[in-house]
Image (cartoon, rainbow, N blue to C red; front, side):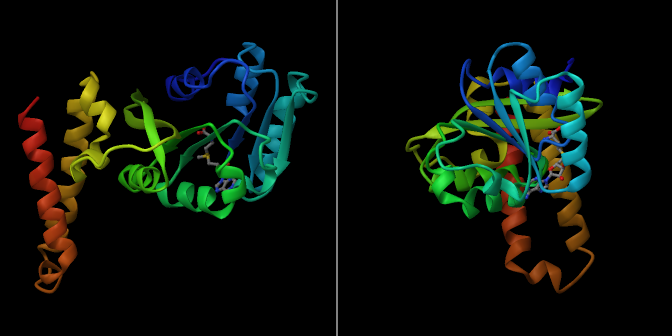
Length: 229
Ligand SMILES: C[S@@+](CC[C@H](N)C(=O)[O-])C[C@H]1O[C@@H](n2cnc3c(N)ncnc32)[C@H](O)[C@@H]1O
C-alpha cells in the first residue's frame, strides 16, 4: 500500500506497536499501510456509512489482513470498547464532527493515549477543545497535497498552558517550529478571513454583529503574526 503525503504523515505519528482505531477510515488505507509496514499488528477501522465500510472490508480482504484489521460499521467511537485503542486517528472530517465523536464516548476517549486529528476545517475549534479537555498538543504538521494544505495534530493527555488565541488558529507547535509551510498556512487563514469579512461588509446589519468585530480582531492578529516571519 502506497500512501499520499497526508496519510503518510499521519502514519508517521503512530507509535510502533500500539493498538489503533481509525475512525472514518473510508478505504482503510491507513490501517492497511500500518499493518503491512509492521508498525502495528492490529487495528480497528470504523466508518459510519455502508459504502466506505464495504470498501474498507473489501480492501482489507484483498490484502488478506482480515485477521489483523477489524472493520466495523458505526458512528464514531461507538465501534470501540473502552481501552481497546491506545491511539485514535480521526482524519478528513470537519473539526465540529471530530469533537462530537470525541465527546460522545468519554469512556473510550479518556482511555486513549494519543489522538491524531486531521480536521478539514475548524482546526482552531479542535485545538481549543484539546486544551479545555486536558490534552496537550505534542506534534503538529502541515502537508501540501494536490495543491491543498492540511493540518495534522497529535495530542496526548496532559495540561497545556493557555496560549494567545491566534495560536489556536495557527497551531502553537507549527508557530514554534516555524514549519516550512507556515507562511503559506497563515496566508490561507488570512485569505479566508478576509473573504468572510468582505462578504459581511456587504450588509449594514452584518457589520454590527459581534462576529464581525471578532473576525476583524482575528484578522489583525494573523496579519501581525505574518509580519514577524
Ligand atoms: C473524507 S473521508 C476520510 C477518509 C480517511 N480518514 C482519510 O483521511 O483519507 C471521511 C470518512 O469519514 C466517515 N465519517 C463521517 N462521519 C463519521 C462518524 N461520525 N463516524 C464514523 N465515520 C464517519 C465518512 O463516511 C467517510 O468515509
